[in-house]
Length: 479
Image 1 (cartoon, rainbow, N blue to C red):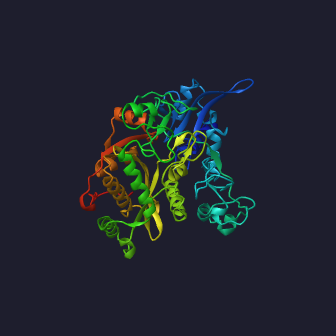
Image 2 (image 1 turned 90 degrees about the vertical axis):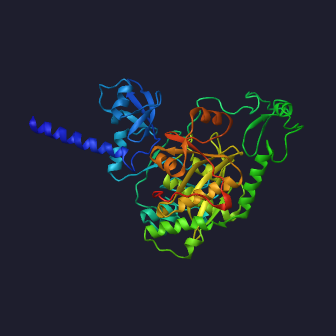
Image 3 (image 1 turned 30 degrees about the vertical axis):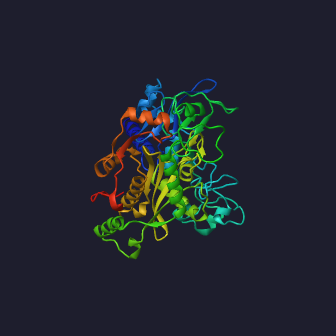
């Protein structure tokens, strides 16, 4: 009896360690859809839903983060004490099944390939990587024909040492990954958004042009009734504009400046920004050459379709995939390419997004997404530096370029969503503060602002920068 008890205790201990792997790096990704199931006589019943977040499960009914045992108790099944055998993912696997697969060397990937090429951002006949599920046009990869068998993109082939054969489609011995669907991480407002910016009403005419026809500003993306525009004295439209339409001179000026910056292409960053990069290299004992003084930046638009911009946009998307957890819509489509290329997908509108990149030796080392909602406010929903180049001052230089550009347009404020671990960096080093709930609510009612679950929205006044200078924090930690 004693020996049996010892064996049971050892089994339980191994099981606990096994299950801990689900909440460790390379375990179950944040946002993975989960639900607690019980078996009935004729069918399996779902009791509650949620999603994995950090070291717990966020309940779908109360938005509280719970441990697996607490999640089981919340489902009314505390007596079972087997949460890992009753909590299942969207593909039907239990948490115990996934933990066993991870212990056997299998890996988890997410259903984020979507219907957009990761290089050009367009849809069509796509080739999907066997490992990461990213999608590509064969023509964008210069493939003359569709490969046979399991195909791996260049990045996954390099990571796994598969070589050229795997890239061209020869079968590999790597186990097929566990595909997990993620829940929506773009936080939806708890109230109706949109409506006429003047009367705040939501009705509109969809078949005829009349006073209730809705017009969108092509820069700030606010909605207006044609009749409200006339009654307020802003303009008297007789038909839907054939070209771009702007609600004010500021929006027209900002749009023109953005298009001009996109067409101007790559520019050398100011000397003061290069000095920050040089100082970082010196502090870390890194080699400095002429490339440190020739760092470039540019603003890109996926809608411009400039051939020379496509590799830069693709590199920016790769940086965001490297540095951030998957950002997906309810449909399972990846939102990162849509944001980078300024597309609409799964009810999310990113048409006003621009991509800002920092380039060293023709390589994109840092990237950010920028959307300007007129003169009052702009947003920076994502900004990141590739891991290979973190801590070298590139992040600071990119942010300085963005703030300098906003200052030149007289944009008043910049907002961004920040994860808990990054709050002190943004607030203490860059002067951001938490945005008041009422202010955020007002913006969300009028604008397509981007807010992610588990983040706080920060805001700061844009520096009015004289003589193209900017105050950069000297003690900014490694990105």
